[in-house]
Image 1: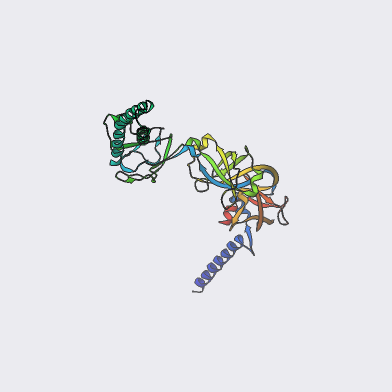
Image 2: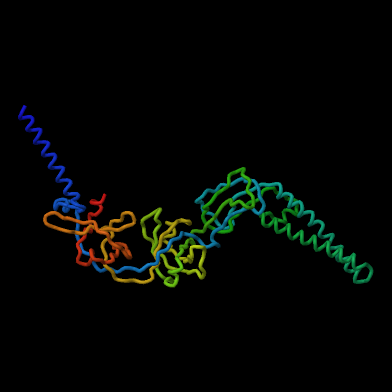
Amino acid sequence: MKKILYILALVTFTISCKNEVVEETVKDDGLITVTAEQFKSSGMLVGSPSEQDFDVTVKASGKIDVPPQYRAKITPFIGGYVKATKLLVGDKVSKGQALITLENTEYLDIQKDYVEVAEQINYLKSEFERQKTLYNEKITSQKNYLKAESDYRQAKGMYQGLREKLLLLNINPANVEKGRFTSVITLTSPISGDITVMNANVGMFMSPSDVILEVVDTNYLHLNLSIFEKDILHVKQGQNISFTIPEASKDVFTSKVQLVGKSIENKDRTISVFGVLNPTDKVKLLSGMFVEAGIVISSKKGLGIPIDALITENNKNFVLLLQENKGNYIFKKTLVNIGEKSEQFVEILSNEAINENSKILTKGVFDLTN
């Protein structure tokens, strides 16, 4: 029995000692301790901040957009019921291609009125010319002449107006004059591009205020950014832009400033900046995507550390500063202020705690903070 109790006590003591060792390797009075074995097995590295080249940027945000002339919203000139459509969002269409057909008896009424006026106009023209001749020969009164002229011009105006309506509805006036009436019209695309919006189903009534489809020519995608008034004097045409799509990718894309707005917009006192995109990037991007961007206005040298060495928590930035290396590595989580960023480095603004001689953990930070 005593032997069993002795063994149990020995096991309990051993487990207790192991727990104490684990706690010491993780944390000691706010410091993080890493054994030499852990340091080596995790592939950790320690290094000093070094001088790096950094771009000085103006921060901006905005979206991927297209110029107004390359975005078309398709609405009916006169409302109608959707009869047929075979298109879906994402389909490519060409300029002049049929998009959708609508049906409405109101289209027939316009054609009927057009034919009636067309038939009247020849008679009214002939009467006007007759009254003009009689008036010139002093046979008829000026009143009769002016009335004939008024009737003819009024009919002519109505004829032209109805003709333009038919053309807007894509109905051929020549066919109407031959008695070929139709209650169906076809809406065509005014530009080539991709369908980005489709709001129609067969049987739906679409009024003139309804957007049935939207077509965007993605060959003309560009950056539409907003910068604050205080930065406008630093931004010029031709400057480089780097930007990301934070909701979709971590990739960094490049652009150049194409145009800078000439007036301050909105209540937030911002100015529009437009950037041209690389052709290879356009196929990866979609109209309407939110972007975060930096416009490069100059360059400078600064004290930099690898981006992987930076810890960001609650909008504050830290590094693991080496305090002691006597067998074990002891690090202290140290608050730092950062400046500009490059693809691989982030600028550290030197202070009393961090300088070019400081030793910080540059690789393996993730393993100790997660």
